[in-house]
Amino acid sequence: MSRPIAVLGGTGPEGFGLALRWARAGETVIIGSRNAQRAQEAAAKIKDKIGPQANVWGEENASACAGTDLVVLTVPFEGHAQLLKQLKPVFRSGTIVMDATVPLAASVGGRASRTLGVWQGSAAQETAELVPNGVRVVAAFQNVSAELLNEDGPVECDVLVCSDDPGAAQVARALAARIPGVRPLDGGKLENARILEQITALLIGLNIRNKAHTGIRITGLPEAAYR
Amino acid sequence: MSRPIAVLGGTGPEGFGLALRWARAGETVIIGSRNAQRAQEAAAKIKDKIGPQANVWGEENASACAGTDLVVLTVPFEGHAQLLKQLKPVFRSGTIVMDATVPLAASVGGRASRTLGVWQGSAAQETAELVPNGVRVVAAFQNVSAELLNEDGPVECDVLVCSDDPGAAQVARALAARIPGVRPLDGGKLENARILEQITALLIGLNIRNKAHTGIRITGLPEAAYR
Image: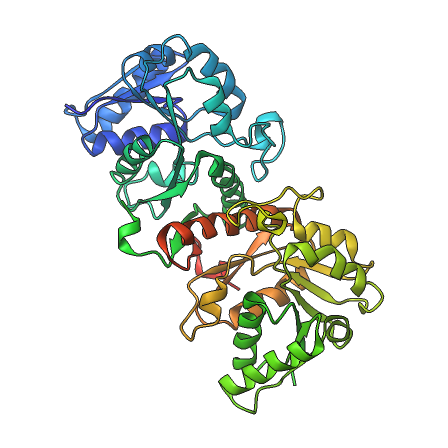
């Protein structure tokens, strides 16, 4: 059995979509939520969709995090720092935290097509500051449409993975590649997370103007870049 | 004859590539440069490439700007504000300024895969502050590879156009569409230029890591979005 992926905020559309896709690909998934019952209901919904063989269950966020060393953050920015402080005592050393959070201005009543400035440079860099030493932070999955993840077709989007830890980035790219249509790419150091986060705001604007579910592709790369 | 497009900084690789593509598409192009002779040499090089029928000539930047109401800025960021101050007295009212400038940290000795923070939000918004009233500012062409523009094949890149002036944005999108392979898109208000500028830094990082000439495509949009 693969090591479980804890998707914190997994009852929201982005987290639920990622959990669904990974469970469908045969990964073991723990849905995390502030509310354990809602997490269990989301897990049951995934089993309904893909069958009882799915390795998925739900737990409260901290408990889900404690159960693995592979964690994905898909919480709204307004709950981001608070959740990380709550998780501090339960993180295992060596845990990989894949942060998909985007600091949308909607978090403070503004527009979803704008981002907030984060002092550290990006939500993912804030995460790097708030996790204990030994926890490995990766920025990824910000640009993947929640709507497309929750449908059945391929997701036409490149997932750029930014991290200062090459091994952790490799794990995130391998998980990205489990989603049909997604191509994983090395997006450079964690500091580049600020660009991924802002691209989401641009895509949301395009979605609104065109009533669409957009993604991005990078052109001009050799096949060897996607691994 | 179409109204001339003045490409300021047109002796540099991005400006020269745009000028080449537009001249090849039958547009009238004025190459602008700090040095009139270098501008004339660049224009001669374009005629060598595509034939004597090309409507292209070279002038000093301010003189090139004075000769039309359609201007493209492709200067390095370190010369950006200075050029705009120089152009202030020569801009015609109603001129459309399409700004392709990216505030790369390389401008102050840093990396080309990082941007500088610009107080106004982006280089294009700085432009909006520095031009006289009545000049219409558009952000576009930041993400188009200079190398690909200077080759003969199609340029696999979507050009997102950001502006607060819908008519000016429409003109810029029409010019983008003259470049084979390029698809023009409405990128929203001028404030979104900051995202386009940062995407260039991301693409430069990808280029360096993969020895490639990258671009971006937006996925998930209906055909009607590209116009």
